[in-house]
Length: 119
Image (tube, rainbow, N blue to C red; front, side, top):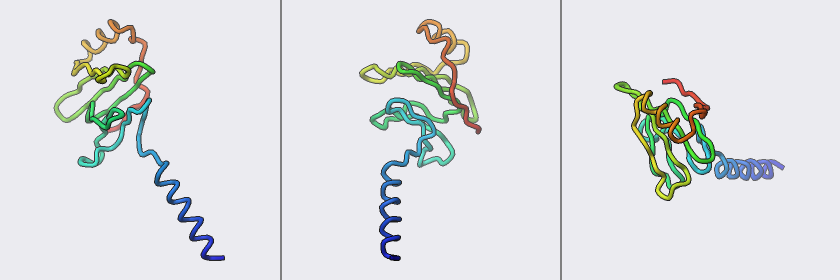
């Protein structure tokens, strides 16, 4: 009977390994996860694992756009990423005033940050 328990635990472990998603946030293949080279720092990647934003402190999105606040020791920057563009159009960095203005131009001024991450 003991051998069967180990097999069951092994199967559960394998399933967990392949289906566990370590992302802090995801939206249609875009993932916010910890940067392996810099533990504790969050990076946004596209479905091809290309880094679009680093030092992410806030994030939000809908089916068309992702908005990001990135914050390091020196400055706070804002980004707008168009998801359905062929080359994942990324606009920015913006300061807060430029960011709010660009959101209005894109008619996404109602979009808010969904998640906030402490530094």
